[in-house]
Image (cartoon, rainbow, N blue to C red; front, side, top):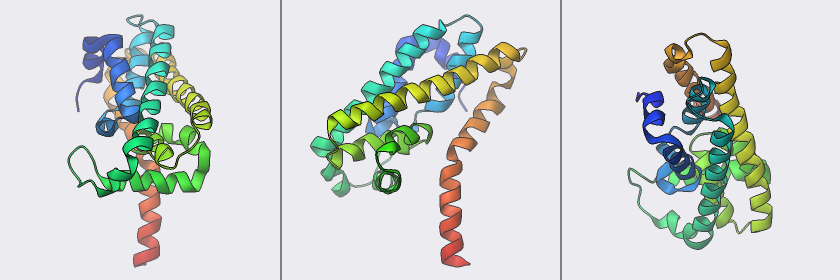
Length: 198
């Protein structure tokens, strides 16, 4: 696993902005470590290397703009995605998963999906495909973007303030975040396997 602390210190706020932007709505952005990145950035900010308020603003703007690009991508070229062959950067399954998730949770998907990898990237694209009104989309997009950034960044920031030498624990914490964020998928497919094979 790459050293996220080193990556963040290398790319700085501009790099953090791009990664959050890409993971929030660009087709190839699903493999970026959004949750882990925000948590690690908050951890670094707790030591004074990053200004926490500037970091939060940069991440929120990146998340909202990224989702907006995803929405317009879905609105303009979305239907063609279902005819596109799978590749390393794109799998039709991710769009279908986001569509199913969207049907189950409705417009609140734009808030809930922020906390779920893969779904986070494709939810705004599916919103565009479904021709959701942009006024409705941007409202929930803003709420979701702000919520996601505040929760994950401040989690890293506050843990960094109370745990001595927090960088020592970054790897197990990041692994923990990844496992927790993947839990909805594990739960979903466990239930599916139980119904079909048991």
